[in-house]
Image (cartoon, rainbow, N blue to C red):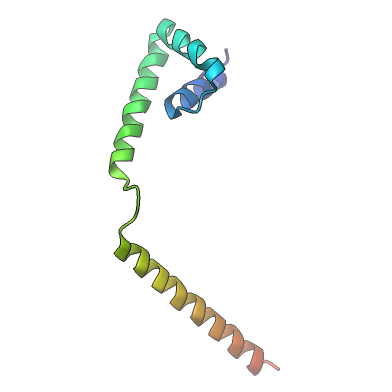
Length: 89
């Protein structure tokens, strides 16, 4: 197995997206390669910590404020385009 294949295997295993057919192979590989097992465990801990820091859904005030700003910017851009069209002809 190449280093790239090993990295892909570990990534898919940690993400939980490894095809079922390869799951037992990955577990056997990790059991016989302690360095790779330690890397996979560290990646799992890191992923869990990141998930704990990231809210599942942004706060409503943030969504409203962001949408309001985007609408204002879009409206200003349209006004600018309209002004350019009528003043350049």
